[in-house]
Length: 202
Image 1: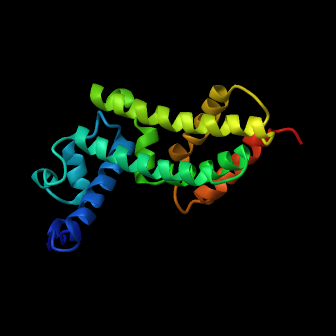
Image 2 (image 1 turned 90 degrees about the horizontal axis):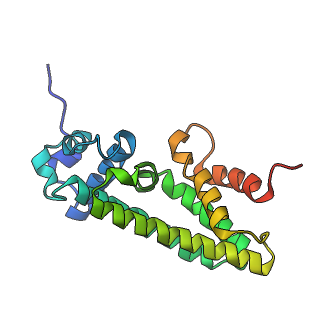
């Protein structure tokens, strides 16, 4: 029986260190999102990449370090979405622009890991890091909601409650979304925004 050929990553001859690190982090994000951080092991991540556990130590020394790097990638993408959204004129337009991009992010590897892994599974230090990241994002959305209430593009209301309702709805998308199974993340965002911002009344 012929042994399966090693993956391009396992051969380690193609691409530079940063490209290979990106592969490692994406694999870790997938494993953590699918198995949960507590249940997942470094061996699971290595198996996903078809490499040995010692080979992972070139990129991270522990699960916590991998989780921190995955969280950094997700936060970087979400911060960019916030900056882009703030370029829109009204608060309503900002909220809509943000969630269009946010939905795309959380349906990809780093974003899925960020929203699906329960932060209580992390170490205390990583829990604190994740809590601060989530607070930063929540405060940014609340500011957009307040702006919408002030400019009349959104009905005035408690920004904290509205933020919780919106994130509660959108953060559930990665649980059931499957690429190629129907709507794109952008289309899902449009459908969600249509009834979340206008309600169910005809």
